[in-house]
Amino acid sequence: MPWTTFIVDDEQVIADTLSAILKHHGYSARAFYDAKSALDACLMATPDLVITDVMMPGMNGVDMAIRIKALCPSCRILLFSGQSSTAAVLEKAERDGHVFDLLLKPVHPTDLLAKLDTIAHVAQESIAESKIA
Image (tube, rainbow, N blue to C red; front, side, top):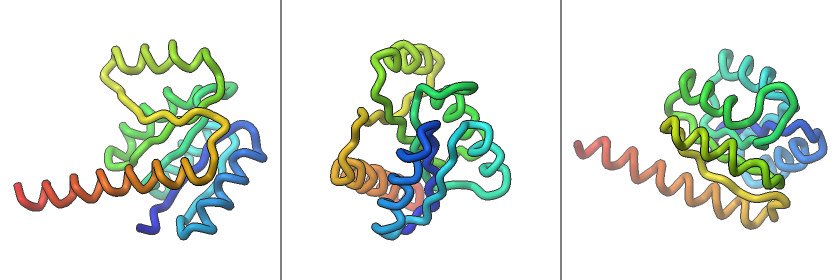
C-alpha cells in the first residue's frame, strides 16, 4: 500500500534517512524537522501515516500526534524515541485516552518496515470489518 507518510524529527539526518528508506520501499514520504511544519502540511494534504520523534523542541511528538488525530482521524501515528523521558509523556497521553505505537531509537530499517507492515495489516482488517458491518 503506497501510503503518504510524514516523517517528523528535529534531527534532520534522521528524518531524511527514514524518508529515503521509505521512498525506496514504495512509500510517498516527506521529511519535516519540527511539529509546526508537519501540522501545517496536514492542513494541505492528509497523510496516511505520521512517524514522529517524541522529544522535539517546541511541541513534542505526542502533542503533535494528538493534534494530527483531531485534524485527520484516519491517520495512523507511529512514535519513535531514544530518550527515557518519553515514558512520562506517553503515560500522560494514555491517561487522556490517546494510545500510540512506539518504536525505540535507533530503529533498524527492517524493524521499521516490519512495524509498518503490521500497521497496514491492521488497517486493512479494520477497513474490511467496517464494510461487513
